[in-house]
Amino acid sequence: MTHSPDQERRQRYTITQLCREFGVTARTLRFYEDKDLLHPAREGVNRIFSFRDRARLKIILQGKRVGFSLQEIKETLDLYTIKDGQAPQLQTSYEAGTKRLQSLKEQQIDLQETINDLERALEIVHGMLKARQETSAAS
Image (cartoon, rainbow, N blue to C red; front, side, top):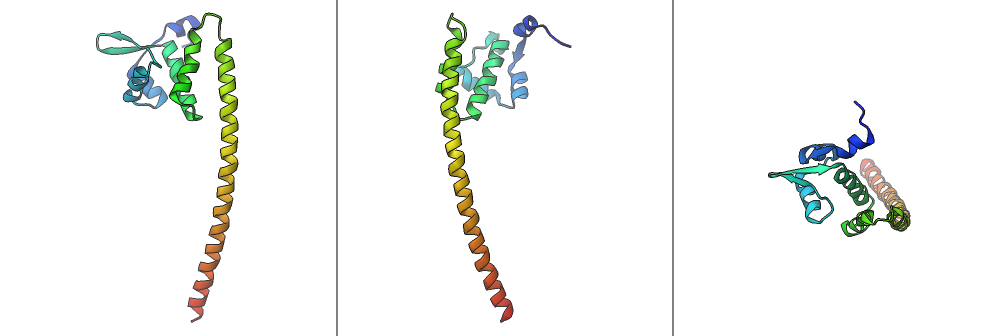
């Protein structure tokens, strides 16, 4: 069943639904709530998450996956509340994303160099091991 954008925005989610959908624990959602990243409504003792909370959670998890700190993610998310639209949020996200991408590319180069060094070292060790095994077999 397809929902209109308005129906989706009114959609409500339980903590269990979001945990299942995003593969996180209830403790994680409560932690993000404590850090003021999510703002679920309360119905008695139950947390009810909005479409906006779900979208924020998706951004939080994507940000964490690429290495942003929770503080950086919070600063970006907080810009959504500014009345002039999403331009400041988009600019901040773009700048932060560009810096993070550059950092990841540098790490990728470093990692590839480390992999190459380890492969060379393993080739040497393997050659030494093979030579010893051949010497032992000849004896």
